Amino acid sequence: MAKNKSNHHRRRHTLKVLRIIALVLVLVVTAIAGSTAVLNVVGNSSNYAFIRENMKPVQYERQLVPELDSKGRYSFTTDGDFKVLQLTDVHIGGGALSSKKDNMALNAVATMITAEKPDLVVVTGDVAYPVPYQAGTFNNKESAKLFAEMMETLGVYWCLAFGNHDTEVYSYFNRQQMAEMYEDKGKYKHCLLLSGPEEVDGLGNYIINVKNSQGAITQSLFILDSHSYVDGDYFGIKWKYDCVHSNQVAWYKSKVKELTKENGGVQPKSLAFFHIPPAEMKDAYDEYKKAGNADTNDVKYKYGKIAEGGELICCSNYNYGIFDAFSENGTQGVFFGHDHLNNMSLNYKGVQLTYGYSIDYLAYSGISKFGLQRGCTVITIKPDGTFDNVGENYYQSKYKSFAEKESVDLENEMSEVTGGISNPLAEE
Image (cartoon, rainbow, N blue to C red):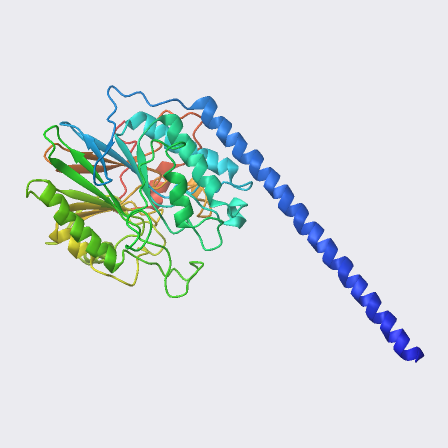
């Protein structure tokens, strides 16, 4: 009896100790979470203040204002050039650990937009980067709000395609919730993102048209969701990336037919924007390399470099035919991001394939000190629907920043990276 009583006391004592340990752990976790939340608020508040105190509406001679047509599409009207600024992989963390680098990213974006005065900014994915060990938060909406607040302050029309980091599986908000935020015209009247048709895979499959004063469509901009990860790679650690799906390809084809009918039987020229590069970018680059970094019958080099380690092009192993559809239906160029050190533009079988210059200060270790890839892509659409594109480096003197630019050694980078990236400062 005494032995059973002793065992009972030991069990009670053990349970008491375990309860105390559990309570301590809960208190520690709560304290860390609370401290992190406070620091997140402080860091983001500082960046909101930076936006309010330093940034002003971009001064246009005459800003083009889009209209929402009867089909639910935004359209700009001009008989002159139409200027698109592509940004990609902005990677705003929105947390305590990233606030300094978030400030650098916001500064870079606002600086280039203010100087370029684009008619439309298109972000090809990864505005948000809610990776907790680098950002300090899972809250992807805070990142998006910072960016959207900056764009509203600048007063520039903009839209985006979702990237893989915008809505990670562990982040607080999914694509639908993020799209609803961006579509809130009460807060973000300059954001032209549309959720797109429910029967088509992904969020943010939509069209923005450029028309002339006679009502003819001179250029259609297709924004597509290239999704995130496949084959159970929910966290993206195996680099198993997705792509544009087959029903999106069918949607694209149907919209080209619809636009052609609206355009008096004339198929409008078009450009496409999404995040993850199509498989044909790898095909084109492999052919270019095999030819000794020289043009071939199918590949024509324009500018830039594949500078990811191992010359990586991180595209999907799947291919549902979007490039072939582009080639057959008047799409002249495709713009994407995803690989932050790649900024090459190649014409492949008549379609210009272009990596946008990235912004990222956060995702790659040490990338905040590397500068050749950081900038924007300027796309000029002519009244006849033809276009030209050029990559512009952020560290050019024409970009007068709101805060002091970080120091990068472009000359030393040039000595390390050969075979394609030209020095953007050489002609100044």
